Length: 501
Image 1 (cartoon, helix red, strand yellow):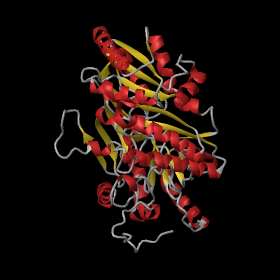
Image 2: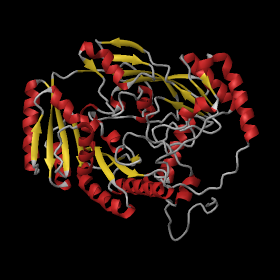
Image 3: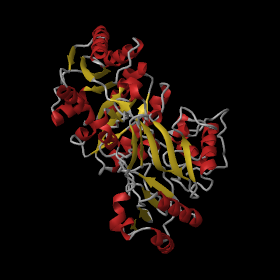
């Protein structure tokens, strides 16, 4: 992201204080004392999400405990024209839950009940504050689990998963949140309760459930989610394949899919990543390999045996320099432990890291990795590469020192160049982390003016006043002009009436 050098007028402290007092006074009658925060020492934990480089203090933080309270809060803010930023567990990595300075943070953390479990229809109805992993823990005794498993699954909430359409290491076979949610109940900015989807295979009218997935809290506040549950496989085994060349590893990913095999998980790590995680979790990785692939198969013992044999053959033909197959569940979890802990392992190597999230066609994995190697030299910064290789979702981790402003700007430019390379290679600027504030400038590269206007049309249909999580995800025309990513035709700058800063 390139930070725009815009002159911002100094805040009117007296006006902000008066607005805060008015908002707190309006919310006090509907919330318990412990569920309404406005003093700086209480609201500072909410100044950012997982993208800690960007911080802003809200007017107040509301922590409702019921849907009725959510509805009342939104009605009050709607009447007062106060922006609202919905927040889950705060594990998001794109700044989607960063507050608006003259707005309210609406935390759904206290709505954390599992309302019902139906083993016959294999569904569960949960509130948005329920942790991702808690769903699987609650239904494990029934031989069921919830498939999407982001790396933050021990902490991230299902409401946040809906807002970001999160995936995880098993999304290749079992899909993203979009493919594992049947129904979403929420509240519009004006307090109206709405429902999307149904328990049936289809529902009458437009399919608005898909619009809610990945909407980043800009359309409605999620208050209830009905998720699909799947049967636990009888057996799961994982192949750990080593490659002495990045390109061979990338080509192996494409070869597995081309062979008609859809593994339960297909993840890749480069040499720098495997060295970092091996020191952290001691997973038994090959430290001499240029790349490591983790290929998991699950199902009946017979299905797993056949698929492991087929994948092994493909990997050998693709030039794997070493192959290990997990012999028991403990060893399988050990192989996965490094991949699951890649982010905290990166935190041991530098004061800060910038986690990117872009998606490319599988055939271009090696191309992008080689480009990133060149960018490391260009920007003078290290980068670890770990990603969902099966669906081309890349997670480069740029290492830098955030206390050095110049180095932080280089890290931003490094990340921006990676995202623009993803678009150039036929991919997208995000896979599962969302756009938030982190990638909003890159939206000007990915989409044209007409497409962005269509996005604003959807936003306006749900939230005409643009009060729900404003200034996120969809760039304005002025922002794209400032960012310099508008197409110039015939030497004429489009929209010359827009101010350039």
